[in-house]
Length: 395
Image 1 (cartoon, rainbow, N blue to C red):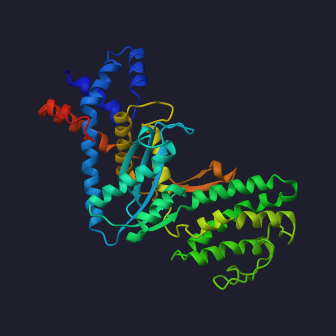
Image 2 (cartoon, rainbow, N blue to C red):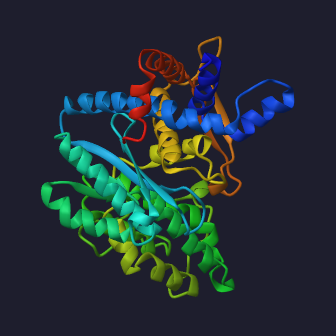
Image 3 (tube, helix red, strand yellow):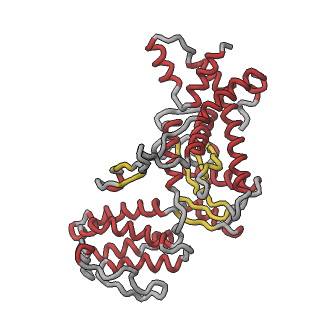
């Protein structure tokens, strides 16, 4: 086999490019290149085994480092579907260790393995927990979205073993914001739209101001919102008897209080004291959240876009590539100007609805892992192409 052919397939695969588009571009430019079928043969027999071996080495190193750390693992877990809607073929479950910001495990579940695609989340979590158990790693804290199937299984299987299970605040706040948006469409409740950012911020404060995660205190702090928004700052709950803020005067007052007994106050109380929401508030994560996991899921879109279908091994290998890229670049420093000052930028994220945020600019991502994969591909094929081909389908 010409070395250029194999290395071209490796370069396309390891950088997360789509073979059909890349090879079409080269053909249009007038460059002689391999066919798409040749690329997929190289992927199946040679490039996928190299990726799997590189991930196993990286995962073993990360787990070894975590085993040497004090305390159990603090991980965030979530599932990602391979396509929009409720007809996903694959569901990938990822675990990130929050203290070191590293992907420690990625599981790919096909919807045919479970009753329907919504069960991929629980199945992926079970596989990940099984892996950690085999590695003699204790899970002390697990942060997830508030899926009832996951919460029930964790409560029955993991909590008796000493695992603390928390819900991510962002997911709960997202649902809360939608409920407030719906309620504020009523003409008599339009004041709720002005209070929306403060109410969602109060949810974050409820969790962040309770570092020990005491459920009763968090629920009391959250319920105090109903009184506060009506200019009542003393409460009848011993766990949180009065608001923590000083008297609000002058520029600190930019919204009108809700009138007690008004339609807006009644509607807000029904939202805030909803039984399901109160249960979620009692389980909010006080310290660790899943924003790093959401960033990883956004990264997967580069390697495995949702508008393209992949085979099982093709999807799995691209998930591992995303994990290798994330682990290689997760803890980059903030970029600096020539005078040593840190660089920042202004962004207008969609969830802020027109408001801006200031974020640090990180150093440019490095692709040293891709260079290592190319070298491993060349060496592995040179030494024993048959052995490399035979280990291809094994996961």
